[in-house]
Image 1: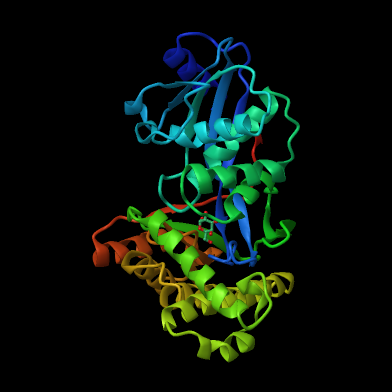
Image 2: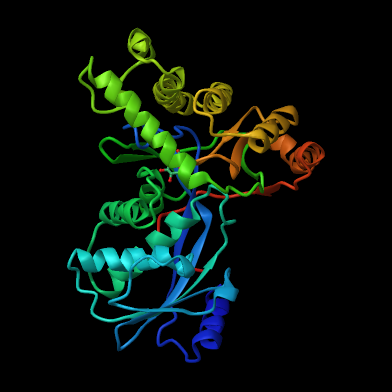
Length: 389
Ligand code: GLA
């Protein structure tokens, strides 16, 4: 990888970088605890070995140049320090620009520009956080290059701020925080109210995690996602008139049920119901993991999917079909992972069934949707850092 990226850098920028440091920023998969990282909930993501690689060289001037091997038609995107506002035509590079722009706004000493070449192995728009991966890659590079000494947590919060304010996607903190703080071979139990993270071994002996991509393009994800956030805020405002809480996930199901009479719109009630029940499922999944109990964990995965389908309404035909096929052909549990509306699902599959699983699930899904699914075997890795071959 090192060699390949350096060669590409020389070809694109027409000079040899003085040092050939490569950085790697992972993507993420979320095992359980979906759509509650903006409701003060407990979530359970892991950083994965698919992600974004970057090679960078400092410039003597105030110009920033960006090139992606994934979007070669966009060519080199060039901006100077005084023109870092969001521009639609800069597409993917806006994530990197947003980070630099925010650091400058916060008065950090960004004293010169740089040339950055990136290469991503995450399928785009798949719900595995290619955008947060690029944000953290840029934030990490700036932290190192300009000796900012910012903590991983700070870089995650900065990246979330950029995603919210600069890109207009009102995500929670899960993706950025796990990409910053991931731990090899572990998932992170993350309390999104306190930002506390606990690395936990997240495997069951005899079983494998399989990531399944619907390959269904997620077109309106951002607007639908922001709509769900607004709906949760509405539910919280209704509840706050009767109960003193800061987050939906502070309630248990019984407490929420007692408040049902104050909801005139059942849809808004159901959004809150998902948040509250998903929080319980994540807590129970922690115990199942501690007890080495894959069956209970898998049941919780299945319940999570049903709740995201019926109460939260973020799945859709492709995801539901793929999850059903997975359960039919050997998975003991399966569910959507990430924001939903297309993208990926995960399945917990007995090792003995994995070999035929891809083929059989793929065929079944294709016969129902006409789309070819893809499957990714991933390992859980450390957060963003220098890449070591
Ligand atoms: C996206 C967001 C996260 C989280 C998930 C759903 O990945 O970026 O903050 O809300 O959706 O759990």
